[in-house]
Image (cartoon, rainbow, N blue to C red; front, side):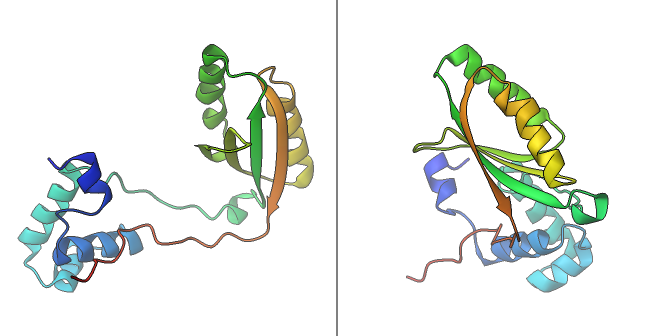
Length: 166
């Protein structure tokens, strides 16, 4: 297995691996036959190569993506959270609790003046206000929050970076 440093730089990914990854990122439900055709390899090879990418920890899962608007979660926000004190027990409790809340899409531990950045989706601005009050303002470990409404979200590249030219 490659070292963490090698994996982070895309080591051991050849052109076929990159095609497989790009196709699966674009459509995780692609058939193996179509995947093989697009990669220019036999279906049995496509299956073996895909399994190897999973075994190597490069492909970490497949998921369905839900339109938040279609399920009534029309308001998204990014919430910066600054903790009051850096007590390990309180940090661990915060980290264990917050990502489990159904409104939380992602939670990032970040550097700088903010400790955590939350991405949440709720049904309304009133629900957003209530969520912040109920889950952050009342948490004794939280010292400060700042909420930013998300007007639009544009997904970036979720696959490997393009291969470097020699």
